[in-house]
Length: 268
Image (cartoon, rainbow, N blue to C red; front, side, top):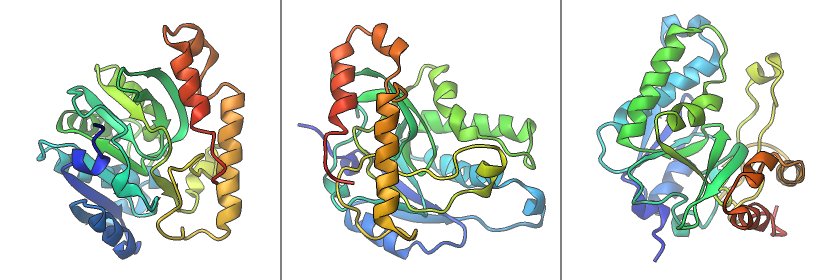
């Protein structure tokens, strides 16, 4: 029997600065999560830090706490909007995998590499809106944060989240992407993305179900339609499942079934 995600995790952290978190925290507690809000406290030395580095500092705080738990830790940002059936959703990773690195619940620019015997997809994502880590992988992520602090440093923008899959995979961890997203990114774009010629908006391409509550952004239909169209485009352009990966795989039909099947829904 497939275990639910909630049954596979030990603690849940909501990362916030000044955002309101009561609605998200209340929902996750009702879903069975043991929730704690970690708020970043502003310090004078942060004045010239890039937003990307301040975000990294907040995630690092959660990684340090994850070191204290023998069970996997769920980490979500304050603007994560879960789907209403979150409590019933299956684990997106193999709970018996002692090499679990990171399991994304929300993906951005996702790719899949292979499908495990249990039907879970291992692959790539950027964005740290919602994900699961372990003691072992948290230690490695803290190591990565130390490297970013040394070079390029706190004042320089760096897309550190886009390198997490490579960093963990190079150290023999397995990274998982979900069949469908467990929620939506409800936040506004980081202005540093535009300044560095990156995509200014990211939304979930396909959700597991209706959202538990309305995201803070304005036109929900418009934003969800944007996410769906972009997701379908990435599938058709071989960005979600890349040609070389498919051709080199011993399980091409499993990959195709996963990649296409997740999009077969009328729901935005």
